[in-house]
Image (tube, rainbow, N blue to C red):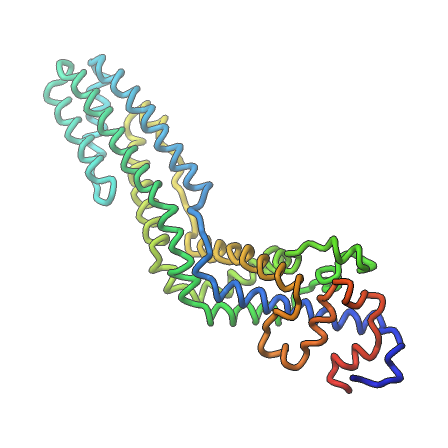
Length: 338
């Protein structure tokens, strides 16, 4: 291979950098393609921050139930006023409609029986508030299951389109320090190569290309995302939660302790972002395997033409070539013998 006269001439820093950049880019293609092809395995969780807010709502609602029972049991204007507020504001459809309707019925009882029915009304409102909390909690419990289907419903359904997005982003020019990702910190010797993180390339893609990947994936996955169980369930929960939250805020001082800020989330973007992050684990596993045995890498467009260069750059075993020992003939081989 190459010119015999160049066999002992050291490769320049520029030549080594070009070969390492090629090898790094090919690793990105290899691990990205692997992860996306196995996208149905991606695990997505419901958004913790927003779910935390809804869990807090459930906790406050249960506390309000206890307080409502005590307050209404005391009779008098407080009970009547609270019941009247419920009657005026209750109603609406959706998941929370029946619960709010229950509050309305409790208000009607209070309006008719007034003080004499205070204890019964208090118990009724307590039961209804706890029922509302139970209803919200039941949906929360289903959210992880709904989001767990994202891998199959979205990532698994758009494999070819997502691979095209990854190739576009990678070819768009990620400003990676390829020598560092392939062979570790300078001077990229055996010790540095051995210490290099086995998921360095996967981490780099996930950390530096996430926004670009999400922005470009959203349009190609839009229909699947909107039709996903996670998206539909989340929108139903948030719409119902926000409606119930607003109406419970009308329960005077008790309601004020329950009412929270409306929850907003661009769930479509969240789902795609979590898919991108979910690819990282799949990429990292594949990257570690390729680093251990570079010959196992499969990148159809380039591996047939440049398999030797890829293996030379990634082989850091005792049988491999140290970074400082790359020669100009290795670069000539890489350039096709030119």
